[in-house]
Structure formats: C-alpha cells, structure tokens
Length: 157
Image (tube, helix red, strand yellow):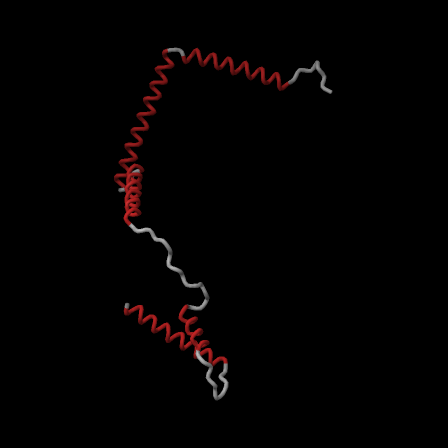
C-alpha cells in the first residue's frame, strides 16, 4: 500500500527535466533569432563546403596520380557494361533446353560402355575358369584401349 504523503521521486525528476528543457529551448530560440547567430551559421556552412570541395579535389588528384578510377568513373563503366549486356541479350537466341548431361558415376563413361558391351556379348564356354584378378586386368586393359581411342578422336577433331 503506497503512502500518499511521500512524493513520487520519478515525478519530481520528470518535472525538473521538463523545466530544464524548456529553459534551454527558450534560450536557444532567443539566441537563434539574433543576427550574429545567422552570420555564424552562414560562415560555418561556407567553411564546411569549402573543406569538402578541397578534400574531394585533393583525393581526385591522388587517384589520378595512382591511376585509380574514381567512383564516378566506375559507375559510368558499370552503366556502359549493363547496356552492352542488354544488347547482347537481345541479339543472342534464347536457349530453350539444355543439353542433357551424362549421369554422374564413379566410373568414366568409357568404362561403363565396355562393361555393358561385355555383359551383352554371348557367353563363351571357357576351357578353364579364369581367376578374378585376370578378369579385372582384362577389363582394365579394355578400358585403357577405349580411353586411348577416345583421346585420339578428340586430338584429331
């Protein structure tokens, strides 16, 4: 239960702050209405504009000596490049469908073709069963021969 005879400290702080703000605003308003204030503001703005102009001029001189393009030059190049790209888009035909890509496997396409051909070939009766190592060496040799033939075709083309 709050006692009514104690003042609210936050309310006192708010009232004091409002009085200080009002006093500062009144003082600033009186000072801003004077002719001296207008002259000072005018001088400060002239000085800041002059400093900005001198700094931009000196920076552009540094860029020129270092042979570095300025922001305006880079923007002009970007606009020109954008216009060229737009014209190229108009001139080039639209690509309707992409060329289907081969399936991604661990074996190269040549090796798969050799294995498939071997699987489709009619089975021969062997005089004696071959060892798995010999069969693997044979498949590797076939794959190597097929890869060499493909590389010759690519070099010839």
